[in-house]
Length: 103
Image 1 (tube, one colour):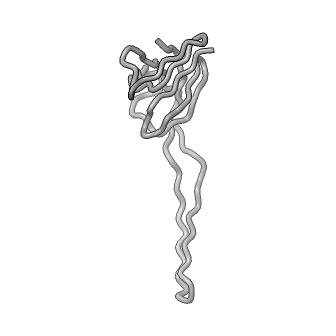
Image 2 (tube, rainbow, N blue to C red):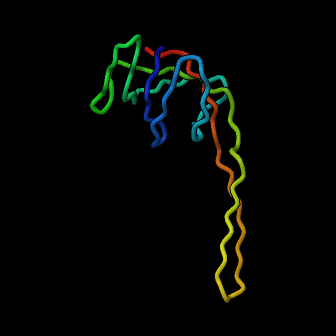
Image 3 (cartoon, helix red, strand yellow):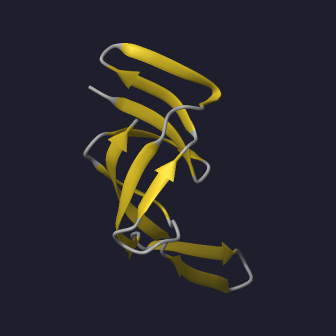
């Protein structure tokens, strides 16, 4: 089993070959191919490589499948004894990526 840990958008994501993931919005059109160079950890057939902080020779090739919005979050603030209420909502922009190659 081949997997890697990638630093992507300020988060560390465990990725495997052939699986798709929802990450924070990445600029690009659906169908575009992206290369991630910030690979922190790589495991292939019980051979483990750990970067300090990154592995220089490893690249993760991903394909953008689609852009979509995350689920709705509701923010509700109340100030007691003042009759002040504020209700807001937020939906995060997300990008679905497919891991095509780990080399």
